[in-house]
Length: 482
Image (cartoon, rainbow, N blue to C red; front, side, top):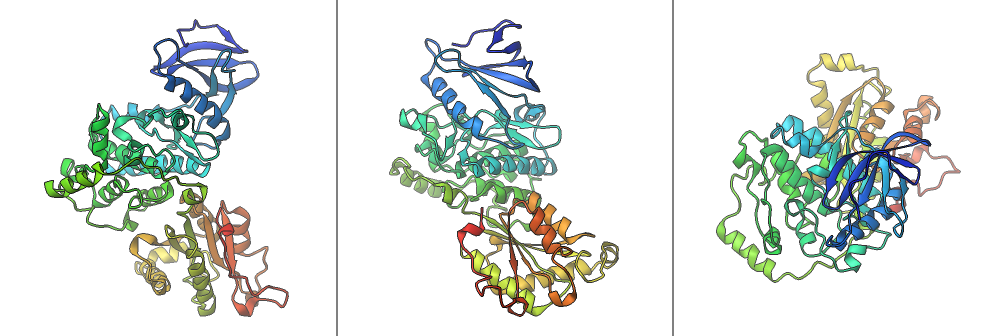
């Protein structure tokens, strides 16, 4: 239906400007409106004679999903036209450049890829938290804003947990863009958020090597190679790719989604904290799997039927980042032990958690300042060892645990900032000791509880409870996690 529209044309109060993009599914124009001050674009779908019906279904899907999305990682929805009269979508115009444009300048170093990849993972985590799986992540659909954040566009192939999946209901094959689709998408599964993490792995591979791990398949048979084919390790193409980055990329590209990262927040965390990445055989891998190994995978893949398993909302959010504040500057054994017991109880909620233990030097009651900490080269290591000693009894595998010692003047500000940057789902910390004369209003705990981007669990030792306080202060349920 879409054809070139002359500048100055009015469509339901919107004045059309220049065309800024022409794609297979439609055209995008800059528009203005007297009631809207922000820059806007109008998407006009193309579904005339000879056009694919997927264009229509994609437009309907975006019309349902975009009004439900919010936050800095998507374009703001403005208006939609009636499908039976003049279909269109009006959205905020996103300033920045597409990742595809950035790729045209050549591959990037790990120092550039890590923050950019983390920003993409932030965007994915945001839409996943809103019950949406994008299913078409690729450089064209990621806009890098001037402040370094990333916004995602083009939700025509997306799946929303609570809305009808029009493409699936019409039995239309819509696996996304061939170089980036996951194995489960090839099999017909459209409801697994880990599919977006596979696509993120392809994007990271492309950013750091300048190549695509699986090429550009042109047939369904070529796409099915995704079910068994082992990608070439990035370091075999670019030898200076650091082991931690190869570990992250190859883990995203695992065929079995249960072996991949389970949350975009976990990917973002590892990209921002390379020293905390648990290195496995993936990190030093120099070649793809051998002929016999890949032949075995191929044989198993040929017997594999369509993927019908769905992931509901509870499963999508079942990979929480649990952040625990451990006051290593005040080794109060009773309080630390209580926080440890509480943490162990919380960890029983999920099998896919990431526990992040944080100690802040200079911000708790002990008069240690960041300056003093900086003058002692062994102080950071000493507190890191104390954190390790605190966490050891929980016997967690390395990929489930990370330890951080931060130097800051304000414990509450440092912990809140860390929680925001690393997508914490729950913060666990000890309650202030009434015997030290701290009031709730003055305590770091009160500031954290008031400003936290997530739930906060305050742990009291039995000696700190009053007669009116319940004995179940340290009992948890899934309601503690958002």
